[in-house]
Amino acid sequence: MNGMFSSLSLIVVLLIAEDKQFVIVNSATTLATISIVTAIGNVLGNVLSMRFLRHAHTINLLLAELLLSILLFAGFYYHNIFWVLMILGIMIVLLGFINPKFAATMMNQVLEDKIATVSNGTTSYFQAGNILMKLLLSGLILLVKSSTIIVLMILLSVGLTIYGYSIKRKEGL
Image (cartoon, rainbow, N blue to C red; front, side, top):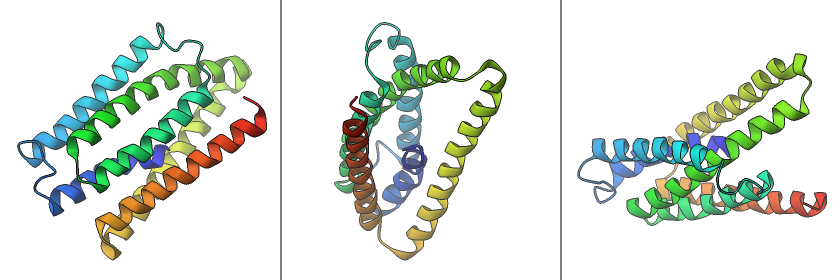
């Protein structure tokens, strides 16, 4: 999922280059608006996580993120920047809910002398996924049209959602 989030900037720039309607005023304003939505959504999610969805299971929030990622990439497919911004805002707020829960789970489950190792390993794992996704997308941009890339991202989102629900059912969560 982190890899999909890291690919958003590449997809946005690609769509701006292909479709002049996929902008808000101009390309710089569009990119700035996406950054602002991301920053505000993350802060809002972190602040509201203490008040709302405190008892929600992390797996349910992650599954909601995956379902929303399908809608996000559908917005990209239809070149609807306002739909993309709305879904992205909701996703980032949910991510703001997930991050403190994930950190608390790690702190409560991992022995104190191993927290730094596990935390750094987790961060490295997520960053490796980001790098691999950007490399993959950079290669795909040279070979196929943007609509094909977006369809692949939708299929990846659907696959991850199905996998997430199967894990949830298997674990009985």
